[in-house]
Length: 102
Image 1 (cartoon, rainbow, N blue to C red):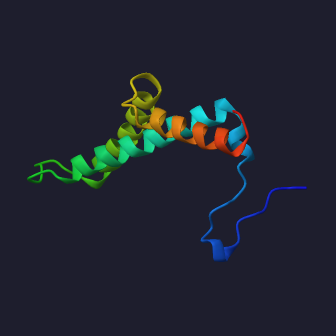
Image 2 (cartoon, rainbow, N blue to C red; image 1 turned 135 degrees about the horizontal axis):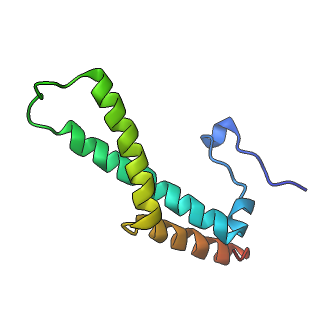
């Protein structure tokens, strides 16, 4: 029997926790979460600039965004700030309490 699928009434949140059964999946999710979180922080910092540069352009902004994306992915993989690990630990404990051991 398969796990229940998320219904529209449930707000799109799935109840299937079978993906938590793998430690590698949890670690990958933690790393991805950290990458997204760090990217949002970096984007916020970039938007808080106090003045417009003399040579700013849409193209430069687009390439800076792509560079920032690669930077945060690298940071999450090699120099994490710890939020991804905290999330992974939390999900691991939640999976243990449900009876599924990652």
